[in-house]
Length: 329
Image 1 (cartoon, rainbow, N blue to C red):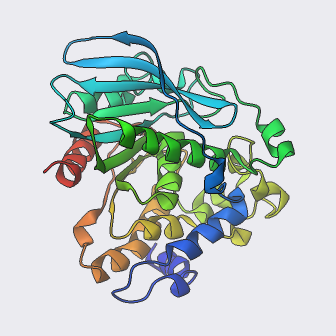
Image 2 (cartoon, rainbow, N blue to C red):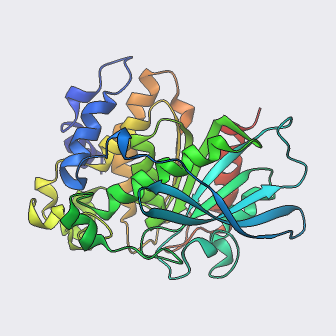
């Protein structure tokens, strides 16, 4: 493993210098080669938030909302607000991104799916304002990727999701209950790498938690990347890079290094059959010296629960305490 980590490290020397912060712009350009460019700021439109329904379960308010992310496109989401939060008593917020599941945002909000993945519900009960949006084509969010590609709006579903999530952060910052300087992101599987990709482009996210969200491309099914190439992800991996990890323009080492010195936690179960845990450990081994050089070694953490592709209780405990440590005063 150590030998492989050295090989990964050899790919990134130009982006990190001792005691300097990473060259995030250079890393983003590498990611854009696979994802297509991040849209320019003029793509933004007023958020125009709308509340479709409101309920008051015990301890919090749950609102079904939509907000505009660009012309002709609105994202559906669940907004969870703890009781007792006002404009005079602002609270930190978490963007909660769902896994690959038909109900999309409903799972993190606690409205179905696996209880272990109800992290928006768990976190609102810990005092966080939580926003759980649908990923394009999941839940209530109908989205035609091919039409968007033909218009030239995007070259990947990954970049579309990054853009939507950045607008979601705009929305959270607009809420009077939210402390806009204390926002984090959490996700499992699809949501785990969606969280990581978004945080690489949006430095307003102060803490990032990825459960079962990644391993090095080189160790993803032996470097065979077909699973990353659907319209929802990065079709350019197939069309431009032949599904070959050796030809990829970026690695997850780049993504994690771009976070430094922000807080990042990887929850990577030992028996995850999607993302090889040794490929996670390789990435963390390369990122550790970067965090250490910046004097923030404690901001990078990884735990390896003895479970399969899930967000088990011991992993959640570490994750929620990690979030509290970095977002609560």
